[in-house]
Image 1: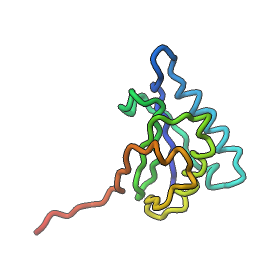
Image 2 (image 1 turned 90 degrees about the horizontal axis):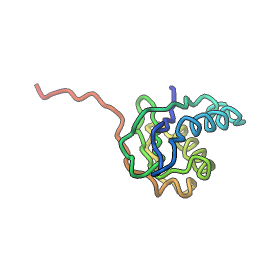
Image 3 (image 1 turned 120 degrees about the horizontal axis):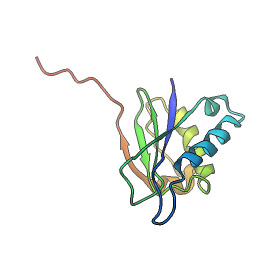
Length: 125
């Protein structure tokens, strides 16, 4: 199963150039240097907009068959330990649902939404 951390490439504070691409690159380097093979296997991507422009920086965690998470107001350099802690919890969760995020420090307070894993709904017969 592929896990993906996506960073908004266009998030920025007023008067500051977007840093999302550089932040994704820094996260990619950090994850790839991890002693944990599962963390190294994370895909780190950027997207042009996550539509939370008033709270830069936005990032998300996604994997097939798991709940997805959207965070905003993240400082990708200052919150790095919390991002890694969440990545580990997310990897360890079979369905992506994180019951206790206290180990994720400040990041747990920046959660904007959890989107349930996609399920196939069969209409009534």
